[in-house]
Image (tube, rainbow, N blue to C red):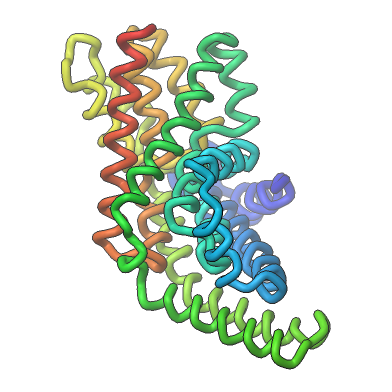
Amino acid sequence: MFNWIQNIADWFVYDVLNLEKGQHLAEALNFFIYDTTKILILLFIVIFFMGIVNSYFPIDKVKNFLSRNKLYGLEYLMASLFGVVTPFCSCSSVPLFIGFVRGGIPLGVTFAFLITSPLVNEVAIGLFVGLFGLKMTIIYVVSGILLGTISDVILKKLKLEPFLTPWVKEVLANAQREQDVFIAEQQTLKQRLPIIWAEVLKILKGIIPFVIIGIAIGGLMHGYIPEGFFEQYMDKDNLFAVPIATILAVPMYSNASGILPVVQVLVAKGIPIGTAIAFMMGVVGLSLPEAMLLKKVMSLKLIAIFFGVVTLCIIISGYLFNLIL
């Protein structure tokens, strides 16, 4: 989908700057150019599209529908399944998360997507089948979906909406005011587009600094942290290997397809499968760049709660994998 961006990044880094493949600086810069461009494009598309959708389906109606209709947790499962079919890393999932929040989707439901999207997708599933077989793949996919669903049920119970940042609350207020104007004046789509466009630019202006800082951190980690650095802490005789692997994975940054070959190497070296998968889930589901992007949307307390709940669920999953397999 974004191969053309990767081609531009490769051309600029390796041809224009004449850096060699494999160099730390080259890898970090290539990663930064690719991910920054991709995420900004996603932000623009998602926010613009959600602006059009929201102009016809007011936020209050969405909230009222979800509050009146008891889905008995099905909304979390549906959000998790949507995450499965979107092949994004943790940072690339943030634009959709922002769009969902702006559209009035409850925070708990949006968390389900934010957790599952980087963990499980069709690309990762295809690689997982080739590396570990069908049985392991099914267990992994089911556990990833359950991880997103269960985490979000927990997060919903904590009633975290007050911990959204003032910036998000202002965006929601602006969206509601826009909708009131659209409905009162019965404006056509052509008349609505300038207002929607102005709001898109305003949102982008507010979040671009966080995108740049977050991806810059991710680029440095991607280019300079060696993949085998953490293996010494995941020994099968270490009772605390699963939580250590999960926590140490946070500084690394990759998508599921990028980290799966590393997981295969870890398992081949005798690292328990549950510990290796916990490490993988920590890499793709929790990252410092993601936290930087979410800082514009969530308070530090909310980010800490979100990361804490997901980390706990990943650790439990890792221990269960080690017991079952």
